[in-house]
Length: 343
Ligand SMILES: [Zn+2]
Ligand SMILES: [Zn+2]
Image (cartoon, rainbow, N blue to C red):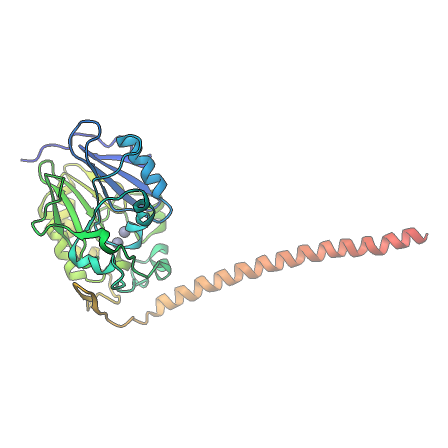
């Protein structure tokens, strides 16, 4: 029998929010990082889960100091996966924190510069953030020997009570973290609690259970199995890479419904990876299906470019008109001045 979540979510409208005993989240723009601590005493060990977007290292450090005291540093950094929005601050953080980083062995190629992820599919998801996916960074980070695989037995060194669960699909080596004693689940991008493709939903942070962000998911069958695996845990709280944590009596039913209706609710109707996944092994991507020509996507892209063009043209016209008026004014003044002078 799981214990109830002992800490209520009290700071949900601030960047820092409580998830469960010893688990706090920090929202940095559209993505969350988490702090997991062990024990009660001051100076207790703590771990950072994921590292958000670039330029947010300072905010992560400040939040850590708020929680654990000045000049604190984690015992380690645990990565759910290596997408750019989950590792952005790593290079800055590693300049001051000489700590181990852990990831799943199948995620290491994308964290050691050996392979790029399969390209995102901006034709799926149907929102502005999905459309922008083609602009996201493509090159893999290279953490070299600073990143190491999680132990094969699913434990985290120095953090008893937590399990590492391999939950592939969104990426080949995606993992979630689960604490069985109180049913706390950190699901990374295997499950999201906001409709991540939609800019308006991301801005409002409206809580809804969803599958992984579609534009970046390259194996839907594996993603479905991962959601079934997580739903079967019947967690008491789910905290994801995107969105606010969800808890309550109805949570297991919501997760179970997502698992049962995954095909209709989470898998796009069409898309590059829908019928055929990208295949990967311990060295990275092996093969990827060809891009789909999506007339609707092309239409939307053309529309966006056209709207941008019209906006630029209007802006240009406005500036030209203003210049004309100015010059006219100047011209008149010039003509008038000599005329008045001559008079
Ligand atoms: Zn991701
Ligand atoms: Zn993400």
